[in-house]
Image (cartoon, rainbow, N blue to C red; front, top):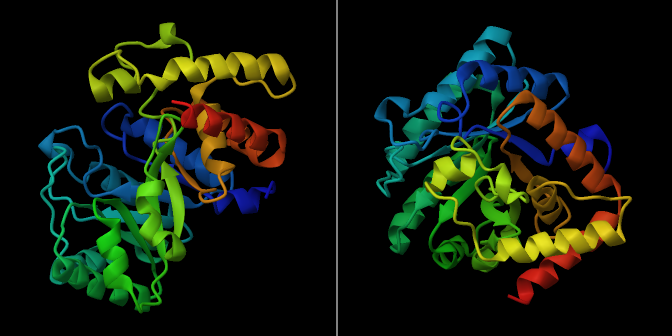
Length: 310
């Protein structure tokens, strides 16, 4: 698990903040660094960034396509998420069979051999027939040789019912970090899913409460400095951990998030959301440490105990 090739199969470079808090030059530089470091998996979506600026709809996916064309790359593994019709945090979506197959054709053209996972997200539906229609399209996606992804599914239990008798294997992105995890909610799909954590930094939470700035991701996303109640318990945990394990010190919430995802027996994969080349470099170094040193498994146990006691 500690070699680079193995870790590269477990990490996706996230693009959710491209065009919002991350400018084009920085995004391109991160792609350069990611690729040169031997990593190939990149996650994007039609509605990134979800900043409410209509002109930014499809911006992240188009920046990625521009980088691919400029470098003549054919060996990326892009995960595209489709369905949302705006980037305004609206539930408006189209997951009909016809729309999805048109989208599949579009992204096959846009990304070529770099397209690896075709996924749907932001599905709030409770109608089994509508879900079945979406699955008919996804069956054709799977038959084309691509992997299938899900994200933001409100009724996993209905998807599980409609999937009965199917051989479909899913990659499911699930919000999973030390202060919030949707993993249990996806229980009905556990038997046929491989889970990929996103939001491991919980939107930009920081162990040092004095470290927030007006342009910090947490402040930009939430519009407030108010933190989840569990944060103080996690700060106490870190103090106890650092005193007991000076050989594996924790200095950031990012380290907690990496451990919570990469060491979790039902997850082990994640979308990396960095805001600079330096931060991405640090995150990759921390990820290698987390999967390579067994002491981090104990830290996961401590976090799970802390969460259970709340």
